[in-house]
Each structure stands twice: as C-alpha cells, then as structure tokens.
Length: 307
Length: 207
Image (tube, rainbow over all chains, first blue to last red; front, side, top):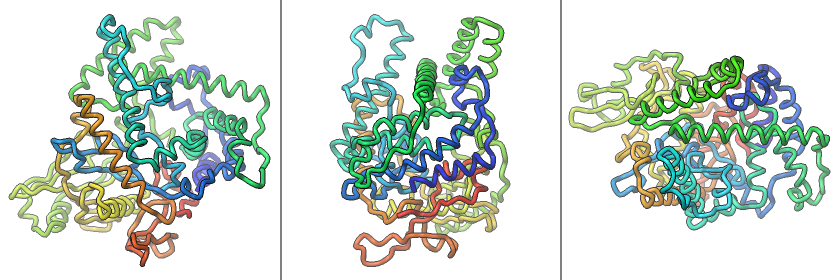
C-alpha cells in the first residue's frame, strides 16, 4: 500500500518519462526556464521504497486502520438547507479507504498551510492597522483572514468532535509521513526537489521515527552535504514561488485550483490583466518579458504533456 | 478550468431519457425537460424534469476519465454504503458501469439533492455561518471516520467486479456475515492519470 503509488510512478517514468517544465509556472525561473529530467526523481523513488516501510506508526493499530472520507471536500460538493444543515455531499469519484495516518489532513479548500499563524493555530484576526490600509490591501487582508479562519475553525471543530482524526493529525511526524506518501505517489510534474526534501527530513529524524522498531533498521538515505544544501535551497525557492502565486491569486480573487465565483469572473479577469501588465512593465529585459508571456501563470496549460 | 473538455463524447440523449424515466418507474412521455446542469465545455450532468415537476439527475463520465468501469462502479458503491450509514448522499436510482446499453455511455441516475449549493453562497456567508457549516461538515466526517473497513482500496458491490479481480469482503456492522460490498482496486486519480492507465501495476486492495 505504501509502495503502490511509488511503484506506479517508477513504471510510468521508465516507460513514458520525458523532461518537463515545472508544472507550477512561477517555479520555472528558478531553473532558468529549462526543462527538468525525471531521472533524479526515479532515483529518489527507489530510495523512498527502501525507507518507507520503516516509517509506519505503531500505536495498537489505530493509525493504520483503513478509513474513508470525501476525496475533495469543498463548497461546490456540498448542499445545505436554509438552516445550513448539510443536505447532501456529492461527487465521490476516485474515493478510496486509506490507513488513517495517511488519510488524515485538512481538506484542501479549508487548509492554509505555509502560514505561520495557521500552522501555530493562533486565533486569526484582522491586523490592528486595518482601517488605515488602502482598499486593495484591505481586500487582501480580508481574503487572508477568511483562509486562516477556515483552517482554524476546521482544526478546532475536529479537536472537539472528531478526536480520532485530531489525534492522527497531531501525531508525531504525521505531516512528514503524509508528505512522503503524497509526493512519492503523485504524478511527476517536473519537480525533483520536493520528495527529496522530504527524504532529507526523514533521514534527519530517522532514529525518532523508527524508535519503536525493535530491529533498529539503519537509515537507507544518504545524501552528501552539498546535495542536501542544494536541495533545501531549491525547495525554499520553490516554496517562495508558490507563496507568490498564492499572493497573486489572493490579489486577483482566484480560489484553489483556479476557482472563481461566476458573478465575479469579469472582475477577476480584469485584475488578472492588470497584474500581467504590471509584471511586464516591471520586467527588466525583452527576454524576461518573453518568458513572462510564454509561461504566464494563469494561462491554460497543455495537459497532454503532463499526462 | 478547461481541462477534460477536449474530446466530445457521443451518446444517445433520447435513450438516456428513457433510462432516466424508467429508473424512477415512469415512461419517457412523463419527461418534460432534459437539460444541462452547470457550466463548462463538456457537460456531464443533466437535470431531468417530469411533467409533475419531479426532478432527478443523470451523470455521465468525462471522456478522459479512466478506468471507466471501476470509477462508476466504485462511486455508486461508495455512495450507497455511506447512505446506508446515515451520511447525506444522493440516492442512486440506477447506473451502468459500461457503455453497453442503449444510451452508449456509462451513467449514474440519481436523486436531485435538495438545498443550495454551498459554492453559490460561500463567499457571502458571515463568520458565524462559516463556523456552523465547518462544524457540521466535521460532524459528518466524524461519523465517516468511525466506519470500519477491512482493507485499503475503493469500495464496490461485489457483483460489479470481474471474478478474477482481487477484493476483500466488507462484513456487515454486526460482523455476522458479508455485506454486498467489498474493497477492490484503488481508483484514486494519481494511480490512473493520463498514460498511467496503460500500466499493469498493482492497485489491488491492501490489508
């Protein structure tokens, strides 16, 4: 089960793999707009396979129990009555049971990871100087507050009403285990860094994660100091690019996965045009302008390449 | 998002109307309207309205969804299983996991959910209302997380799987005998995306 996704991706890359631009367009500049070869990821997948079976949590089997949840819990898949009772959950395509320690997590439409306020579970508030901000800044702050609130409300409600889930969420190394599994099982999209960064973190915490394993397996992961430094540097750059994209989305009013409420579509499009015009103006060379256009973040992409 | 809308899929609308009507014990003359539901290039959801105002929904797959048979079969079983355990999920009136039927397409014929789509009011909800909705979703999750399963994989009616397909039977709540459900091949999208469908890799249920 832990290996299936990785084995699948190894088979895919071996047979169909070819160099790709990073799927997340703002990351492309980090690599000078060059395509990335999948061979390093293939190598990392093999390392994952050697390591992963030693990372299963041990706790009387509660965390490995298969559980079911909605595969994409977001507002479009929920129907409510006037009283806001839930009258229906729709679109259960692609759902599966998974061990609790892998199934746990905050639904994507409600999470706000990558934000220190959210990750520390600090009750979110508007900034004190809110009234002094201009209209655009106020809009951004309101959007940010909403995202933080949803993350916070969800975790608070889960702690109170779904302790099974809450315990799995807060279990030691819960996030790292899930990241390893997700990044090793996901379709490769021109990213050789994210899974590697997880493996590095796993190596750094190996003795703690495998503490309950009586056989005391040696860590099968060994990257050189230079490799680690390079990987973590690139990972940080990628994270920053992703945060920039999120900021752009917030400024324009685009939700997760490019989702925009229908009645705001025109307004959002206008804001997007302005963002692009501003970016082109700020560009320092013809080459930069050309790359911005070629890899513009909100253009549709050619899905076939990544299939 | 304009993905998945490239290839148009041909199917027989008239036959689909027949199937929708008979799924709820009526005849095709009772059907007043058969219309697209929602936006988008490729429509996969249709609203069927009878002359007496009764409505139901017909869903077909995106042309690029794979593996079609397992995806539909599993969606149906998952919804029925959850419904039988008190989770609010539309009732399935009828379905076909293959395109070998008069309409020439896989389909789900199901209940029209009462109420408002949360996506339509989400941005306008007050903070208090958002807390209410999130709390109620978490309550439902709590009930779902408590349901026991014997293996990891996707849910199916045993009868919908080929004999050779590996499955693990789901016992009834009192554990006294097998229910009609089982856990079978994993239909998570990451395992089947794009050309991955062609790979003969292990997606069997796992204890």
